[in-house]
Image 1 (tube, one colour):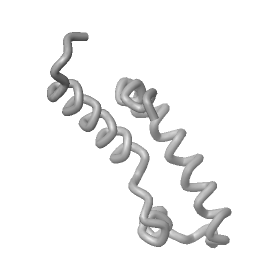
Image 2 (tube, helix red, strand yellow; image 1 turned 90 degrees about the horizontal axis):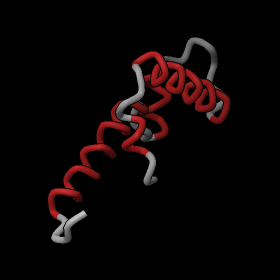
Image 3 (cartoon, helix red, strand yellow; image 1 turned 45 degrees about the vertical axis):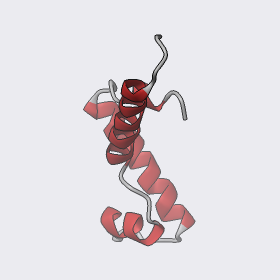
Image 4 (cartoon, one colour; image 1 turned 30 degrees about the vertical axis):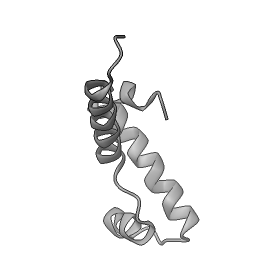
Length: 72
């Protein structure tokens, strides 16, 4: 996803809202009960937390930019 580095500049509040939405969708997809911990949802699916994923994507883009031979 090319737009992912833009999310690195998003506020913590916005990221938290997106994470809450992802947790709700995971709970629905796994037919998880309301008392299931978010960590368990992510462990069961192998999905990282949204903030972790965004940070990793941003780092990947930065590394690619530093390795690029051509001028921008």
